Image (cartoon, rainbow, N blue to C red; front, side, top):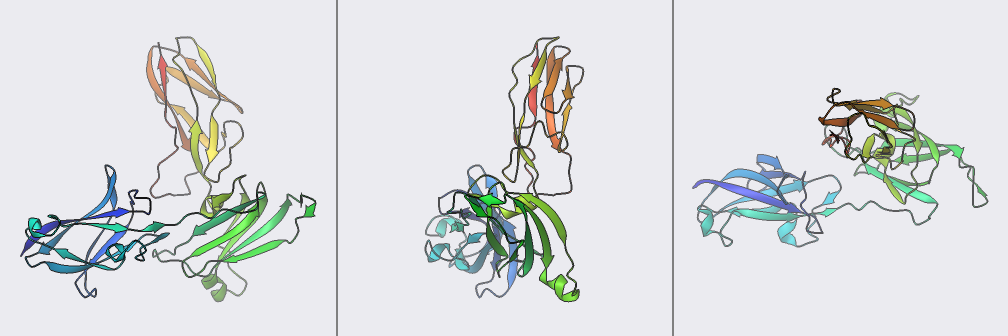
Length: 318
């Protein structure tokens, strides 16, 4: 018996690396927890590493996989399902594959789309503070009557009531471009307080697309900026027009200066003036610097947080 390196590789139904999968290791009976790790990207693979005792004949362990929105139900064969039995050999070369490496395969959730071209299907999963699916979360969407008439039909009915299922999942079709007020209230809070304790109250604007993550509607942040800037000569000024995209699928007006903070790292090379509809870049001296865009609102925390795609922008002055 000796310690062996064990690697669990996770893939989705399209054979793409599946990061963020929690892999838990138990004894052969699946009753005694031993260790756990989460798959992380290593090159083009998503892998979780462990050190486990092996032998010849092998020692058996049970592994269980979990990731919200991913099914490990054996749809790709029993050798991929959760839970499953794995054999750890020592030395690893004694195993049938010559390694203690294993593949797991899960089917990722495909966001559903609305069949009506006037509608956008909003869907999403919710968890509680312990990481478990949040069942019974009540969400009320109040129609602001924008739009009020669609294809000759009046859009009436002041409220749509939603509740998450046992998986913490909910979905609803909303009018594209529609404006709604969302009130989110947990069933636990309602039981504790008959008046109904509201967790939060948000104004939503639905994007002009067939589907959207409901979480992005409830917690929109600046997601991406598209901008292009060529080389500048000393003394040049340049009107830079950024296209600012929110995570809720909307393109914001102008430079979205109320939501985005624009800064230049080396103001001896260039400066930026922020106007309503453009950024004015002034080249001051030869060199290179960066124009960064950051979110002004830091209250919405994402894990992992990739920041704003497209930022920073390199400025070169010749």
